[in-house]
Length: 376
Image 1: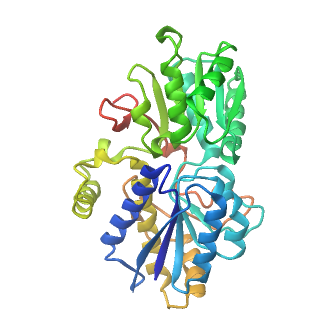
Image 2: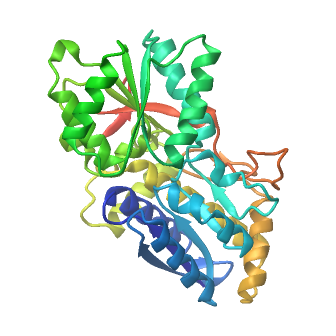
Image 3: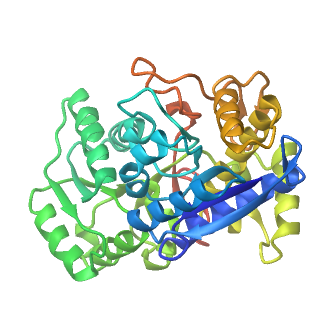
């Protein structure tokens, strides 16, 4: 059997590397077997490009040993290839890509299972945090000009309306936005007199806005509340220590649960597999590791329950059905998963979501660049 990881291993490399480490650690825990069959992992770098991702999906389909494929940080490659994935029964496990529609196709064929943040819920968490915790009322929205940004705009507007609030403006920016362009966008955005910034960006563009914010007089700077895309690379290097910057996460098991047996065992196993990892706090994008680890354990449980035969088409279908009907709890790093997925239809939009709002937290970087709870 073979598993694929189709992710950005170049630009947002920390996210891709962290996901890979989580998958490999879980597979090592499973003895590198699924349903009794030896398994290997093939890593493909899509560099965030949807066409390259499509080529990788076709490669998967041509591989008679390919059981499942993991996606990476970026939502656009998954959204733009969603029909291909579902029509050809490509079993996809999603440990990061957050756009809401990914797990909610128009048809009843749904082959994407997510254990990550879901943008149909994330906007509510971010807006609630800035308003309820910090007492802010006038955010300006800075959004990546992609399907990911669009899905966040919808939920954030709803969250603001629910609180009788409204954004002072909405600004969209493309991939590749430079610090110079980010400065221009910030100047225009701040002309609307916001009291905070909500940012939906990945690392490269997040760094541009962090650098632009650091060039503003300290007394004029605004607190930033962002999506977690900025944690996928070397964003911390660009962040001035005197800028308030908080972002959504899904928990901090290596910080808040480091006494739990599964957390300790996983840390020891990971440090054995990856010699340059001194502590689990050193993970560049810990959510990728945690999600990759947990969803791989769930895959292992589904493969055992399905009873693999070596007929890859039949095995994909059997694992799909098992994922929707897991009989036994699966202990993970974030939590114990009791039937994390169920059969999907338009009346059950969260059927392929292993996590919910109760699993979402807000985090920040400490002085060493480690991700910790925002009050830690």
